[in-house]
Length: 348
Ligand SMILES: O=C(O)CCC(=O)C(=O)O
Ligand SMILES: [Fe+2]
Image 1 (cartoon, rainbow, N blue to C red):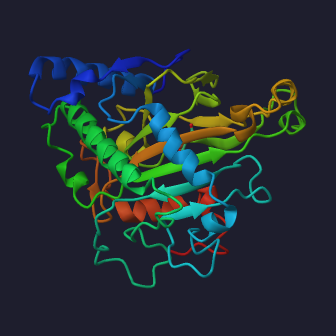
Image 2: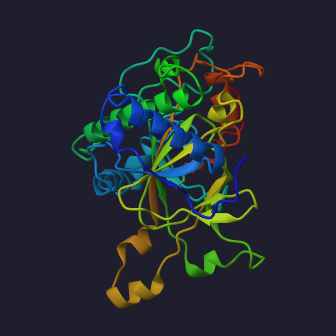
């Protein structure tokens, strides 16, 4: 159960620069600490993260993508947004102001760089190909591809080390999640939430309402590692139903548990509700300075969703609940994701 927290805990993971097994005592202590935070808030800041990318590097890469002309981004859009395209799962999705004004975001989704075979149980007529290759802008316009592929690999390594510690904290062997890494379909998602005008942010009927760009949800998978910029807006719900702000802490990552991990842990870990407030355009700064870049551009974040392979069987360590095949789980969840809702009829 989530607790009545008023801020997110901070966990130093500098230890994870070394391979798991290098410092057993410190790893046991870190594993215990992670258990505490995931059993209470379900969310934490990780500091001293073992990545070769600084935050500024990550957002420079992301900014390069969103700065491309819309025509070029639409050439990478999923087939549901651009009928000329083959990609159904990876690639670009545009903002959809008519469909979802409280989910105003554009994004670009990247899966593993190495080719992965589709699960044999998936019919070739399936609407979404979870194992399809990535799509990229051409290199002359977008030199960031190889850096994003490198970032993907580093985040996958970090997630797998965290999973080892979580396995230990649940009384399992450190390699308990090894089958989840086989043909893993993790997603690196570049997100841009355009800023809204101050009047749009106040246009809600009740004064207690806030204007959102990402509606309340829990993440559906295993573990999320989030880079966020300094715009702010991420909020996490505690057990009293209060929305607790999760502002940017320099060079930290936000980590949270997804629904499947809550299930694997036998309900010990919590998948906590979160949402994102709309970034509001700062018109006064624009007047004084001519322009104020971040206030105009809005919020950028880069969640990395650790996901197992399509065939992976996910079950509770308690063994008393039914198992879930990851591919089936994600296909059923897609029906609730706004960026997949423009499909006239989502059939899997
Ligand atoms: O942008 C954020 O901070 C949160 C994104 C998020 O929650 C999601 O994509 O699942
Ligand atoms: Fe989320």
